[in-house]
Amino acid sequence: LTVAQNDFDFFYLVQQWPASYCDTKRSCCYPTTGKPAEDFSIHGLWPNRNDGSWPSNCDEGSSFDESEVSDLVKRMQQEWPSLACPSSDGVRFWSHEWEKHGTCSLLNEHQYFQTALDLKDKSNLLQVLKDAGIRPGKFYSLEKIKEAIQQGVGYTPFIECNVDQGGNRQLYQVYLCVDSSASDFIECPTFPHGRCGSEIEFPSFSSLHDEA
Ligand code: 5GP
Ligand code: 5GP
Ligand code: 5GP
Image (cartoon, rainbow, N blue to C red; front, side):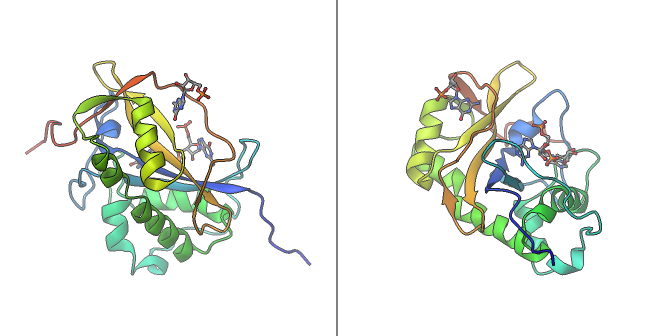
């Protein structure tokens, strides 16, 4: 008899800032379902171990089935869009996240996507930053951004940066930790690695060049 066991200790809920995905050398493609709102969106909900390692692709037999999340697809299009090129409706990105990370989560497909969406809404990151006077279109200290999220969400985030076409370091992704049953945020047992620099840009999406 084999009993499913946790092969992980917690989750990272990873949210991306669309403008920072798009304003790099690689650029981006808007989803076929429309230009995303200027808001954080989900990258994934990733099982992780305390030592920094993580399981992946835990069930080769389980592929993403859109019919299992038909009640969530509208929300997924808005809150979990894919900005990779070529333009897509998101299914490829969702399939990738489900197969690589979701199959290790001990959640079923519907639970996995619903949980990530609900945790994203609960974190309310853009509002939390606005409440602290942090708005898209300017530079801020990394510490100020982290403190605002610590205050507003209640837990210390990890901020991942990338670099725009002008060479500025900018806020790319926000990592929050979630307990292993995916019920609430926790303090992170381990943080990822990577440098930001002390002053980073929080770029505006609306200032990007729009095609037609
Ligand atoms: P990158 O090399 O772009 O940082 O990450 C590539 C992919 O590896 C991510 O999309 C994600 O699937 C996975 N990954 C990167 N870092 C972590 C991590 O700290 N924890 C987990 N669970 N997955 C990660
Ligand atoms: P990861 O393996 O790092 O969890 O997921 C990254 C994979 O998803 C890459 O293959 C990337 O091209 C694809 N992808 C599709 N849409 C997006 C998006 O909007 N953001 C990110 N970060 N990756 C995306
Ligand atoms: P400490 O671990 O002492 O807080 O920070 C060590 C280094 O990591 C410092 O250079 C600090 O600026 C950087 N750092 C602190 N928090 C973050 C974060 O959330 N993201 C990134 N990328 N670097 C950070």
